[in-house]
Image (cartoon, rainbow, N blue to C red; front, side, top):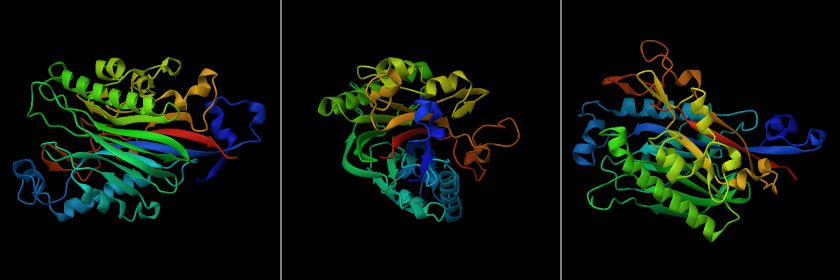
Length: 348
């Protein structure tokens, strides 16, 4: 990881007098909904037929490999001055199986990063899962657990499992929970109880992790299909808008203020939503509260709404440039912008 001077850490509010004496490494933790990264094989009956050569989308090898190229290119562009090698960790959703991730990390645009894969086949009816990519130079996996969401009184309910990966990020113990909560199908209010149940499961995972080891950092990320101020995120998950309120197990959600400023990750009929969120425990934010500073410290958050990811014209101008729209292949990227948080650690 490239070492950078402290001028890049002005946002961290460190003592200016020390600016010329300290150096830091920066680590990116990103989430990206890859929007239906399916292979071309129909192995899930009617739910998979759409993404096959004989399906409605005529999903063939040419389109599949173009999609892979586009997603790899997008990831390759998510670098910064402090993270020239790209994100250390990438949580992903809407991927069909481990094969599509294996194909993704082999793409020439990101092959040099040697991203490793954590994946588990979940019970979702459409066959989409969440997964984790990580650069082994910066993150070492210690443990993996998958958690299934069940809904009382609805034994046929199926959704994505919640993936929890514990490892060493820059040598420090960090657990990352990757989510794709139930959609708003049927209406936001009518389906909110499903996302609140998903949030309760995520909250339980966080609490269990902190009970087991209070000295670790926990990051929860995903396409939550709700905005930061919705009950599932703000009340059940305890994702706080203000960094000083993230205490006693509550989590800081830096993307709440992004949405307040009109910045989102997906849009519908002129309205922006920010479903793609990353929250963190106060392991990463204690320094901001005047407490003992952990080595890994939150620097900033970003919605990665790069220009090349945007639709350039028409009534969806400025929206994410997706793969399909109204059944037409657009050769785009995703209907969601990715999000990322940046963590810093002093070089000793």
